[in-house]
Amino acid sequence: MPSTPLSHWVLAAALACLAAPSSAADLVRAADIVQGKCFICHGAEGESSSPVFPRLAGQHGAYVARQLADYQSGKRVSSTMKPMVEDLGPEDFKSLGAYFESRPTHLHKVDDTDLAAMGRFIYLRGNPYSGVAACASCHGPKGHGTEQLPRLAGQHAQYTENQLKAFNQRERTNDNAVMQGVAGKLTELERKAVSAYLAGLP
Image 1 (cartoon, rainbow, N blue to C red):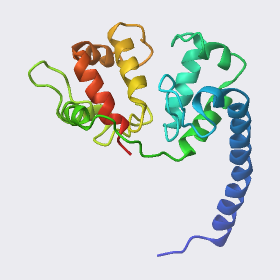
Image 2 (cartoon, rainbow, N blue to C red):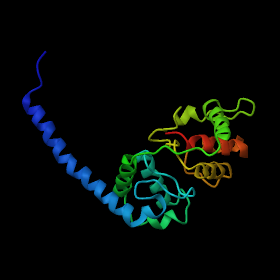
Image 3 (cartoon, rainbow, N blue to C red):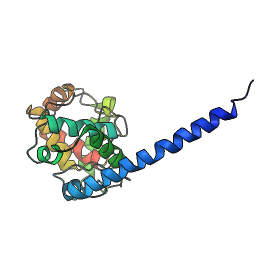
Image 4 (cartoon, one colour):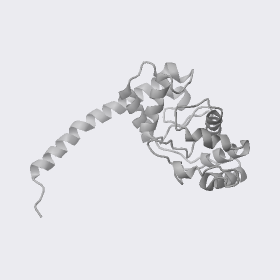
């Protein structure tokens, strides 16, 4: 089998070196934006201290970028987020997404283990008696999601519950319309249970 010409390896290494500074510069730019705007609510490392605001550490970069763009366009409504993103561009959104995705996640203690156990059942198997679909079928068995669907593992229980309510009440419409149907079938107890379970996932 013929070996790869040395010139190809040199070219690949050169391209990698050229790309690295740009990537590093993007993260530096993102860190500056975080220090100037995001840290107040979401923390410098994406570990928000208030359950009202989402934890962003470990969240998929593409998902973060899309949400920021939706806030800017008004597709996702928030009187808090709209002014925060109005002077940012698509490249800033991508950089912020990459920044938060690179932040380490942390294991969080579950306050009510019985409630979380009920949430585990619903998350993994749904509720066959009421037609609630298993959350894991889209967000994955560990709640890590995809680039299109958010990471739910380790999220504040209150924040997750609030988002489920918003989907149910059609106050949040920027994401998959399937969520409106799923959230509409959850009882208040089921919302709280699933949210409690997800909060304790690594």
